[in-house]
Image 1 (cartoon, rainbow, N blue to C red):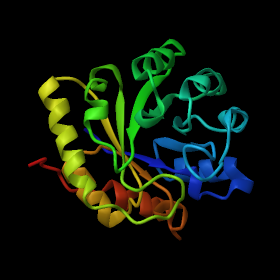
Image 2: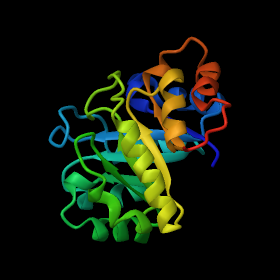
Image 3: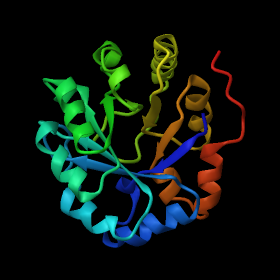
Length: 222
C-alpha cells in the first residue's frame, strides 16, 4: 500500500490555518489531520466543526478528522456537514462503537477507530471489518511534540496481521512522534497512513520533510 502523509494541524500556526494547509498540500501531503480535543478526553482544547467548515472552502485535501472527545456520537453530524472525509473516534470514548461507525457511514464519511498507547488491540478487533482505518496512537494524545513510544511497534505489527488474517481492507494510521527516523519503523511494522506534526511544520523545507517521512524503502512486514 502506498504511504499516505497526514500533516497534523496541531503543529501548524493556528492564526493562519488556511495557508498552513495549502503549504503542506502543495508540498505533497494527501491528508490533513485535524485534531479535535475537548478538554475532557484529553487535557487540551483545540478546534471544532465551525473551523473545519471554514477551512473546507480553501482545500481539496482529504480532511482526516480525529475526535479526541468524550461522546463522539454527538459530534459526527456536525463534522460530516463541515466537510470531514474521514472521522476517527476513540474506542475508549464510545460505549456503542458499532453505532458510532454506522453514524459516520450514514453521514457519507469513512470511519476510523483510534486507541491510546495503553489500550489493547482487543478493543478494536471486533470493529476492523466495519471501519476503513484503525489509528494506533504512538504517544498519549493531548499535546503535540511528544516522543514516539517504541513499544507500539509490536501493536502495529499485530494489527497488520489481524487485518491480513481477516482478509479485509483497512488502513493503519499512526499518530505521535512520527519523523524521518520513526516513520521507517512504523512503515516496516505495517502502517500506511502517517500523521506528523512538528516534523513537518517545524521543518525549514516542508516538501523535503514530507518526502523523508514517506520514505522510499520497500517495507517487508516480517
